[in-house]
Length: 354
Image (tube, rainbow, N blue to C red):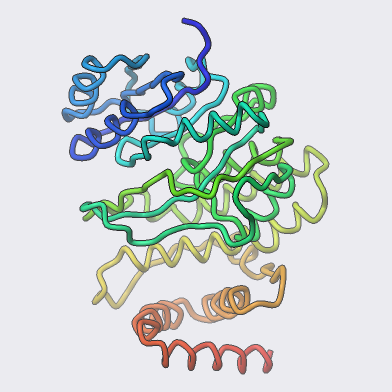
């Protein structure tokens, strides 16, 4: 097969309820110079049958690779191995994209040939109603950033980024032997794209919402107990990766002292959110290494957002049960603007006492 501009890599595992929308969004792309690679990760429902029936009736290039269930990272890595595209795009089989995604990306690639093209995204419910938009306030349409500029601004959360909110030049991935970390509870997406971003020379932003992540009902991560441990391990690996490359010390500092502690506490928050709202005792496993990481937390700037994280971590280290109770009740109070303002004022007072 001749080389195509894009390879769309789709791991498929038991998503028969959603895969129709996903595959149709690929088939309906207005730009046709691409291949679709479906990795059947040991599905035991009708996902692959539904996908293949749609692809058979289409005129797009596609291939289906079957493997035993190894997880999404192994499936994506297999997709990278068999891909022919100059640029790679990773899409889960329960999400979807707009019809003009590849056309818009191809236009900018033709004009500027960046290593990464990225865009906005949103989260939608199962009726496709937008729940939350992730736009960019820090950068403007068609603005170009170096890989290092994008890297630090993603770490600082000034730029919203997601594995499916960008296409990546395959050469960067291959030359630097970047792959998804396998057998990981969570964090493999972030580790992968941060490594690719760091090695990129040129990146370009398109101010459009092309990617839509479906929030599925009644789904609880089966690896919930290890999610905070996985977050800790992910950013430890990233810090070592940067150190081995003799990266700017500011980048390593940002990962060790800011991003890693944040991701641990965010993972703890996700555990709380996924538990029953009326459950009193929530076990959040945190070992001594994670506690040491949390104690290292430093704000990269003085802002309300960073301050909230700082105070939250201090409370968590003081008493997990108090943190859980406060997190649940403060979350309810924040629905009311007056209470939200009061909470923020109290936080400023606490900070001054520190």
